[in-house]
Image (cartoon, rainbow, N blue to C red; front, side, top):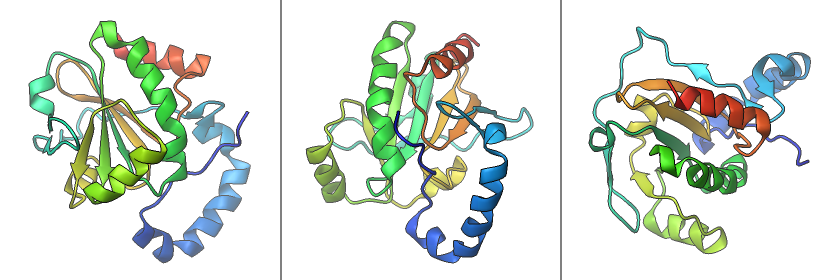
Length: 188
């Protein structure tokens, strides 16, 4: 079983928060069972009073772009990631398996790349081919709107177009407990 990895902060944030990271490591050693399951972080419900971000429309990378409103009626998983983020890279194969497992239920998974050039994404895909659609968040506005401050951050959007919950950090989507939690959330 691979060792769990901590979520990645964008490079700018890593430099500014080195002291907070040290404090977080000591707190994390004391409270891991409250924030992580064996398969990764637990889903956090989207608060009913929390507004839904403005319409999400992003250009695609190597394919059509993402228009979240056009996917209404289908459950959608938005995965915010970056190629420099090791937990993001580790999580991708299990996201592909999740997409295949729930394809018949209409699940659509979109990988939203955070502020990288098309060339950087191409270099990443040459090393780790991914068969999921990729959208580019070139200026980071979508990540800010959806509160993706660390990577990976994953948001489940219900068939009604409203966010259901978020996961911050790497999830093993093939682990039995994660599969059971996800299947229950997908039925909502």
